[in-house]
Length: 458
Picture 1 (cartoon, helix red, strand yellow):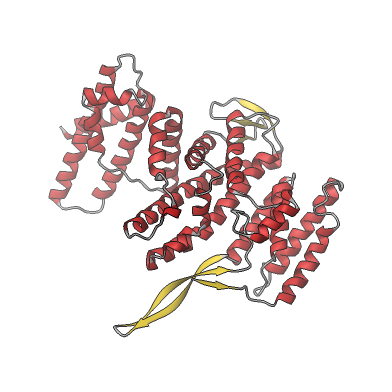
Picture 2 (cartoon, helix red, strand yellow):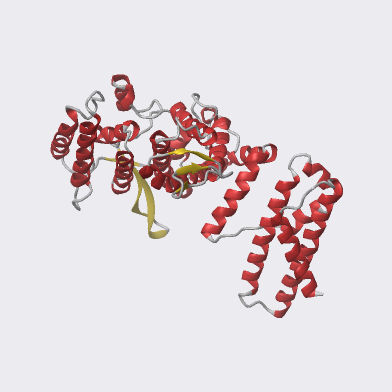
């Protein structure tokens, strides 16, 4: 593990800070100034930072004070263009000047030739938007001006809850620029978590130094006593599903609609254009967050087995277990989660189905079916089976198109026939257990496809 200072002289950085911050010193943090003038000054400041740091090939990284000012604009601005501008600038600066990264070094011993190894590098003076009590600079900023401070673990959880509240209630007085701003703020914070975690986890995979991951922002967030870890995961999952059901702005009516098609209220046209993509990206970063937690759990499991952890690391329920519990006992989340998962697979072109035949055989058993429908509604079971059947057929025909031997083609064809029979049997069992069950349109399509394929094979 290596700590470095950014390249470039301190005098030059200080001069850049003085020149750019002068634009804001008289008004940028004075909310009593006329809004238009305040916004103009903030736009000029953001452009000055972009020009000084991003346009030249050898541009210097902004100082902590400058990063702090950009972050404050993102949190405080009430105009859509300033919110998006400050967010994009922060993202671009993080890509150009990473806080944590891997560098390639060379390592040799008497038994092996030189080989490249990754070394984790952390920039000493880097600014972070988080405050987990380990950064004295951020603590001083928070004490001096709370509105400009970084985000602690409870603030991160509260941000997710606030977005979820608006997405669920859809009140006209709350769906506005604040909703858009909070989603972009959440996206940025998760992007920072990702930028810190990924190089650390990659380094850990090579050298098994658990301390590198223990000190990651993600691990500190999840281990904070200011939040309830399970509650955070459940709220992330719930928000991801709620946002996936929130449809986009309708240009014909000028209204925002939810999945039921109900019109809510007129919104700013600029925000309406930005909202669909921001909503989609928010779902994506929430998924990224959950995947990162899974990767951290996996690395933690390896560290536990090798005796690298201590009592100070505490005990945490694997995120997969929490997600599975939610899907089993919350039908609303399961329904949304299945639809979101299918949309994600369609957009990525990826399908991964394992042991579908085993699931169908389980549902073809009346005793098992009776137990399952006590926890999951028949409508959700139909949705799960139909989408899984579609994915299975797609994956099967992709394999057949790769030029299998005659015997392999026969085996694959027999498997498809068996799955079709079990698909029909599973739906029959559902109707037998609950005669009032109405077969959904997608379920009828799956049954028709299975019957047609069996007829073709007979």
